[in-house]
Length: 207
Image (cartoon, rainbow, N blue to C red):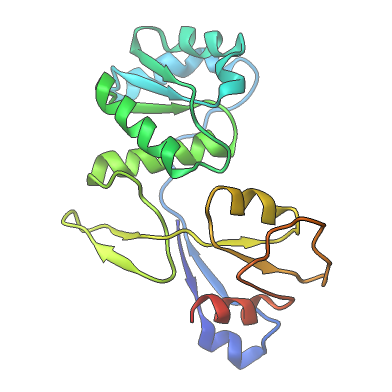
């Protein structure tokens, strides 16, 4: 998905209105519902994948549910990586890239919530481009030889004061969209900037 922020249009209609355009990439197939896990092997077969690597965190990686996933994959399962960390730290991505290369993975199966899914997407990008830790940035980009734009720094826009803890803990520069003008809880890391207006905050980010 690509996102375009139209600052000029926003200024025309007022600072409290945001104008975004979204272009979604083509989603090939969705299968969901009770028992759909049993179709995982057939789905990998349809895709032509023979060595799929499961990416998950330590909790699900130690649960009996993992056996249902690997059993459904059958001979297509090349291994399990259970080291995906919360908020997908770069160290998790690098370790997952190394494991995917070690087992010769030709597909990734994300087992869990947002962190395994984001890790799998990052690793798929890294394997396709040769960039070990893809990161996003408003500040600096580079053009790869495979004609893919990639950013070099992740910025986090917090919506809750409690987001300040987790995002700062994994080394992300944090800006706080404090639209309710809340007071940060005791011990919360200070954001780089905060504002109750998202457009004004974006202007701070883009400086």
